[in-house]
Amino acid sequence: MDPQRINYLLEQYTAGQLSPAEEQEWENLIEKEEHRSAFQDFLLEQLAATPAGNASTDPRWQGIYQQVFSIDKPQPVRRLPLLKYWTRAALILLLLGVAFYGWLHWRSTCLQRKTPPATTPAVPQDRQPGKNNNLERRTP
Image (tube, rainbow, N blue to C red; front, side):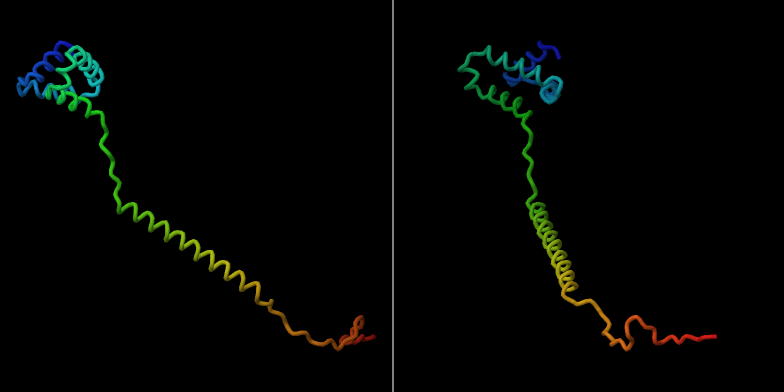
């Protein structure tokens, strides 16, 4: 945008004589991203050129400062406290579930170790080792 047009709008704004169309143009000028840095530099030059006492005490200049430099400030993000409590509760339940599963697994493996293996009772041997008493040799 033309610096002379910015200067004209700035003078009209400080005098409080902006028409509704010029006021809309003024707001669009401030809000557009591509003009913001050039406009801020131009505004700082204009403010530096004014007498120091006049710029700091004039409420219209304070309004310009407020309007131009508050645009860049991001709005603070509020965290939902309910979401914070739900995540904590979910984490606690998850940890309790993992601990319970670990305890059940440990308990089942310990019980398996304590139970003796199933064995058949030993039957005394009636046979002598090395001999086969059950088979009779048939001689033809």
